[in-house]
Amino acid sequence: MIIDWKNIKELHVNKKMEQMIGQWYGLDLFYVDEQSRIHHAGKDQIHHSHFFKVQMSHAYGHEWLEQDVEKAYEGIAGKEAVFSYQCFFPHVQGLVAKVMVDGEFLGAVFAYPFFQDDVTAAQVEETVKHMISCGIAEAEARDCVGKMRKLFPRERSYLKEMLDMVADEVATFHEEISKREARIHELSSEVGNRYRYHNLIGKSKKMQQIYNLLQKIANSESTIMIQGENGTGKELVAKAIHYNSPRKDAVFMAVNCSAFNDNLLDSELFGHVKGSFTGAIKDKKGFFEVANGGTLFLDEIGDTSLTMQVKLLRVLQEGTFIPVGGTQPKKVNVRVIAATNKNLKEMIAKGEFREDLYYRINVINVQLPSLRERTDDIPLLMDFFLEKQCAEMGKPLKTFAKKTLEKMLDYPWPGNVRELENEIERLMVLAADDKNITPEILNQRILDHGDSHHGGEGHGPGLKGVNTNGSLKEALEELEIHMIREGLKRCGFNKSRLAKELGISRAGLIMKVEKYGLDKRQLKRVVGE
Image (cartoon, rainbow, N blue to C red; front, side):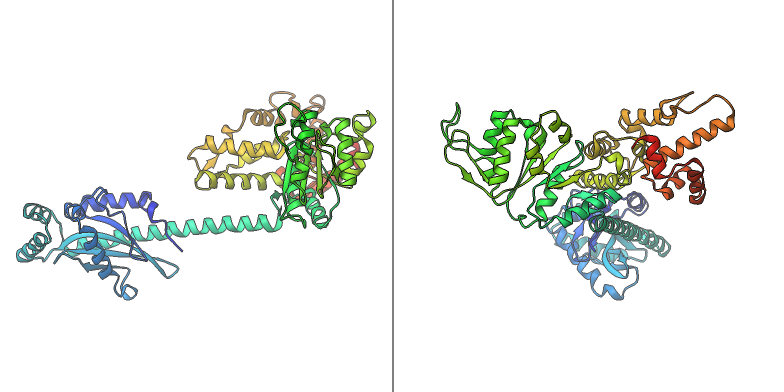
């Protein structure tokens, strides 16, 4: 265990105690770790003691202080929690408070310097002469010794209590930091072991099904199609497949097919030979050749032209291609993972996508759920992105207010995980030094959705179709049906979670679900899912 001595002086309690000890006794505090390294005692520090200031301004001042620490640390295991020690200069004393955590000595807090109340004039003169012999000017030596406090037993006793409090504060602070770091590590391990596959995160049933599928195809060489909305993490899935496959030590390359026009995409994928077009001043390898032996991820494959689809089909079937302007085919061994957010079957029906290519790239299909279909993962993802942002920005770990979490859960996240990650980054910037992230800094679209979802005056969008006329009993029953039906969809039919949200027992919720016919089968017929 290592204490963060650099920032320990900034603790509020310690700053207050240092101020009090400085004002009442004219003493300075400094800190020493278990390896006798001295912290916060340099000549650039603000000193309450003129004696200490003069000492630390001297060329050998730090060495004299090191000798004091060495002497104080001798046999420290057998000494009481707070004890006094004799300093380098005769008759000058200091106090030491040990910092102990779980019975382990991690350092000490020093209060320095003072005379005892029974010091004689001859002893004070001896201190002055010793300072002069060490190279300190006589006038300065007499001045700083003359200003040093003589502490009576009662004052020393009270000072010991104060110093002990400072040491306790250091130990408590260290314990809290250690507990927090252990908890973060525990959560990270939990996420890694239970809710993660490569860099994918999620504990929902749908994500667990994705993980199981990815594990089954880990050693497969089959072509894979990943489908899902923008922002659902298609490239992350492609990387997870690659880095858990026999090709993990080879190249992984990703290309967004929609980012290039047809001619440029042809050159990017298959390369070109020198002089094949204006600007082709030398031969260039394409992505297929660069990724030879590895994996090529073709994102947005649905945006490719029919001509390009023919070329892709050939390289998938035969493992050969011809560079732009070339005459000789090249052979490659590349595993292709394709992805799209489009409905390729509809495109096939319209003649916009080749059916033979569709079946060639769709040997194994991975359908990624949208974030609104896996709301159980939102708190987990929020915590993950928050921890990541705090670490990158070098800030203490923040927390989300309960209302903030509620607003985030209510929002449908049309931009999926990417939108969520961007929102967490935005919140980190706006929260500044606040430890708790409160809802008022949420993006306005999230706040507006929450307001409309819960309804304002009268008949808001969240209550569309609910009858507000007729008897109160009928209106309340209709509202109850609406809340349970929407809640079941939002919670993925997790009745325990919904019951907790609604503030009723699980048994009570089940009775109402049966009463209103809101089980999964019936609800799908009602909402047309």
